[in-house]
Image (cartoon, rainbow, N blue to C red; front, top):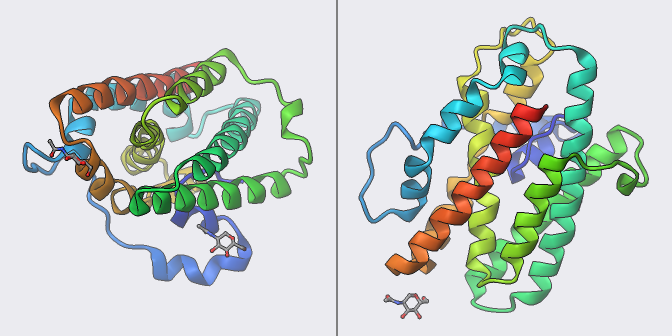
Length: 237
Ligand SMILES: *[C@@H]1O[C@H](CO)[C@@H](O)[C@H](O)[C@H]1NC(C)=O
Ligand SMILES: *[C@@H]1O[C@H](CO)[C@@H](O)[C@H](O)[C@H]1NC(C)=O
């Protein structure tokens, strides 16, 4: 299991889909380095919280992954925690697909993310021969991360989309920035995560529905909290 989280990556680690992979690889802009219009909420959220991404990039876990000195056991623990994350977020997304009947584009978004998470989670569980993911005990950072998601579920559904974005955007960014050599076993993590394209799922929908200052501010708080949750996951790994 290669712990990649967006739709494209869902297929990437599966041998059956190897052919599909190469068609799917495309250059992806990182967003942060490109200046965009001020009214682009999708970029505003990222740019406004880029410091958290930069700090996360220098987490001890990722430093060791990059220079290939990470203990294998530490990586296994990280993978298991990520499986709990994937499993629980899939369950929440399923509920969101049942809850959001309209508007059409938001419903489509939820269904798409649900299918992507579901497929990827299933492939991870199969790969590790895990039939009962709930036997894995989540660590505190993952518990907190999932609690934030659950709290956001009670709000307007657009905020659930916001809550999903840090994971989708941060992982490809980290993978692109890590200088892991190809000869290192952890190069797989870089390779499998670096081509994610969150923009195509998130940009239009966030820009469309986060159309008041109040909503943007609320979105920024949720985005920041989830970026912090990601950081806590990496720094505790
Ligand atoms: C998930 O898998 C199903 C069945 O294998 C497939 O129809 C669907 O297109 C996949 N969805 C994604 C987002 O990969
Ligand atoms: C914001 O978007 C919603 C949904 O499309 C729309 O109903 C509302 O009128 C918009 N508000 C503003 C201030 O543009």
